[in-house]
Length: 310
Image 1 (cartoon, rainbow, N blue to C red):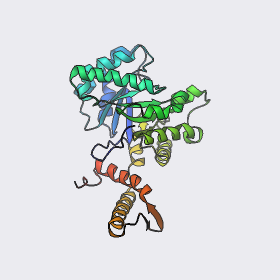
Image 2 (cartoon, rainbow, N blue to C red):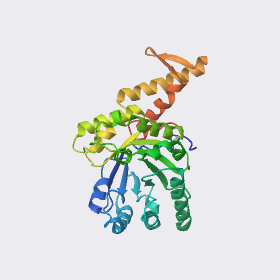
Image 3 (cartoon, rainbow, N blue to C red):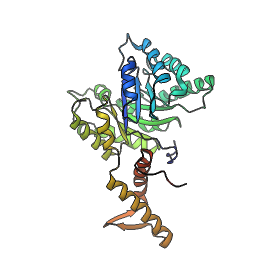
Image 4 (tube, one colour):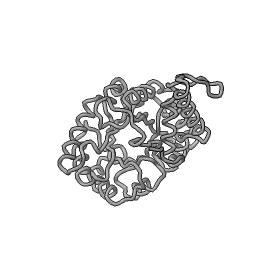
């Protein structure tokens, strides 16, 4: 099982912006966006005729663009395709020092993640990168993946997060009609993804709102995801990113509340050894603290609060 992140290694993934890897122009726009993570896509974002040529554009993007401190990721084709191993070898060998994450699509079980993990280990050894520096994120987008979510999440310390892929999941189970009321229709697989990720101490990221011009729908989905326990959400258009970031950013009132609860709890522990206390007519105990500490960690990482005192 992966250990929970401490604040020094905490990565903020409120928004993950995906864009096709065949277009250097689009990748440059994504790198300049407000997203916390950019995901350059060799899979669904590239037509079969473009997939091999797109590797060169992707390598150029990683080696030349200014990402402004963002998490830099790419999505190869599925490990079940003929493209996967060359996607990973060619791109990581040429640009591995500028890559933070490989996003694995269509993961069905833990062995899929382990295959990618071992391939990355060999590449890191070959090009002199620290072992495990390039992390993995796994897309949960099939019935099989949902049923194996716990094993996938705990498969390797290299795994940084699970992402729920709603469109592929809907197609895999034979759902009909456009994907719109995601949280009514897919509450179980979303909740299962969150539980598996959190049990393993890794991130849980919700999938895309496909009505990319409907920012109200995006806001609704992002707020629902935050309430369910996701830490972030995928975007497919830069206009979605500010909406998503707001949903996963603690408000000033939430920051004040979190700081007051942490301070009050620590003071109560030191002065009276009390493990439960009342905060504004609300019972607070140790179970409340991780959520409040996470709000403060996010706030510090994005500059809303000064760094924690050492």
